[in-house]
Figure 1 (tube, rainbow, N blue to C red):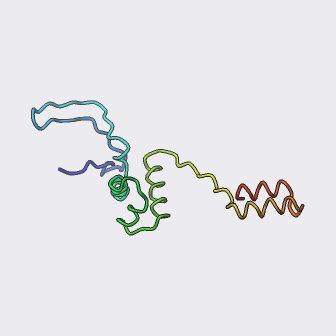
Figure 2: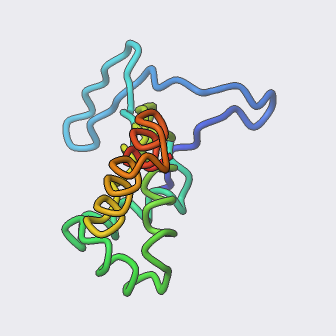
Figure 3: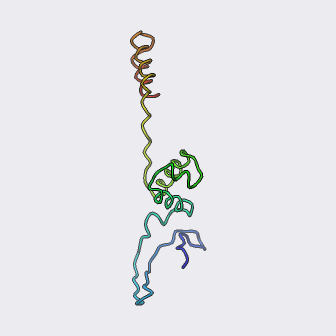
Length: 125
């Protein structure tokens, strides 16, 4: 069997599945059918999705199997999520480490920075 192509070889527009056929009993159905979100992925994105699932979503295992870094795994996952039509939410910045937090609060107490500056530094800006 051949994989289902996504675009018309003549005009490059999206193709639509309109007929399903049973090879066993020769039944055929006609209509407008969706192949789902996975069908729109490139072969590379689909391969990444398979690896991600096989590795149970563990970034370190995916990275080892594909020989890519942790940030690259994250970037490919975000690209995959977007290719499937979902939104990737930006992560909130990590809070300042406790030592930095104490330094910021000390500077605020000593009057070396304003409350607004301290709030911005604590928020990681």
